[in-house]
Length: 418
Ligand code: HAM
Image 1 (cartoon, rainbow, N blue to C red):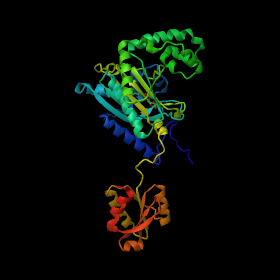
Image 2 (cartoon, protein in one colour):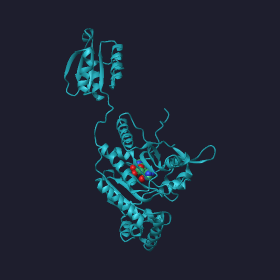
Image 3 (cartoon, rainbow, N blue to C red):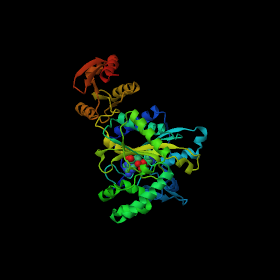
Image 4 (cartoon, rainbow, N blue to C red):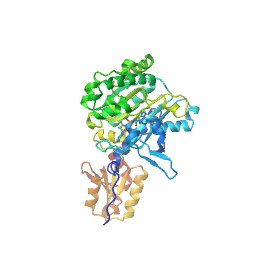
């Protein structure tokens, strides 16, 4: 026997028993996006690697260590997308969307790839749902995307989370702060963890969210970005905080939140849950006022976020999503054609209905109906069918009764409450 071929490490199949949960969250993404007036955009899975180098940043972990990069047959350097924001902004610029309309509300859903060490909630192929609101510099647009994220979580029944908020200020503020932070960290360099010592050259701001306890202790005396903010950045951030409070959205300020992508300016935020273990952030986003222009578009402010769908699924409450079979048509000594016709009629009326395809005993068929979670079984028995009567069984309580064929509709509607 030859060796079996397995899925790539960190890349997972969604098996039929899991897909109802996926379909349900996907339905919620679409419905909530539409409720907020967002339109769907679908950029490709593969882009020029340079797209990510120029936006996420060369010195970030995502671009430096985690990107799937390859050369195609024409010698072009391509990458599997590690996130979707860069592709969305590229598409907006390439197709001149901003010449048609000065504000775009966009949402997307799809796979992304990062070569990370797989563990609970961290995969090499994962899925993101997100939105990008492109064209407004005002804090009400930051508030809108956060309210949309909160609406998705409410709809999914996820309540046990915290929203963390910070501001990085303008690029000039960030640069001044970076200089001050590096000066401080240089003075304690020897005491930093080896990883943070490496980051000091490449990406010093990321040291702020180091999990190492020694680093954490040293950071308590580090300068804070908030002390370097200019009046405009401060006003923007305070206005956003006020709006969220007004709308009853709880949040906490985390002055060490910097995020792992270079394109952010001003607002950054993350959704975290202690139920996820080490990978506690299940969503994140922020403002990126310079990105559209850096891709050759007109200067255009923007803000957005993404959820990691696998992490959302880990947080979902146990509940039976819809989509399950409603009616099972069982057959005892009646021709298969009779069952086919009845099934067709039920499906045309909009019911999710299945029947037996293996010519099994009535007992086995009813066991299958239970396994599928059907609410109602319609049993075609030989003597009853000769009198054009059907046997109905309510599978929740086992109650069984008969009815003439022409009354079936009424009974089905009553049991399924339609
Ligand atoms: P991000 O924080 O890099 O932001 O990713 C967003 C979410 O994707 C994370 O919070 C996490 O739930 C999920 N995620 C990331 N890596 C993995 C992984 N290896 N396995 C499973 N889930 C993962 C962005 O990607 C930005 N584009 C968000 C954004 C949109 N900012 C502005 N607009």
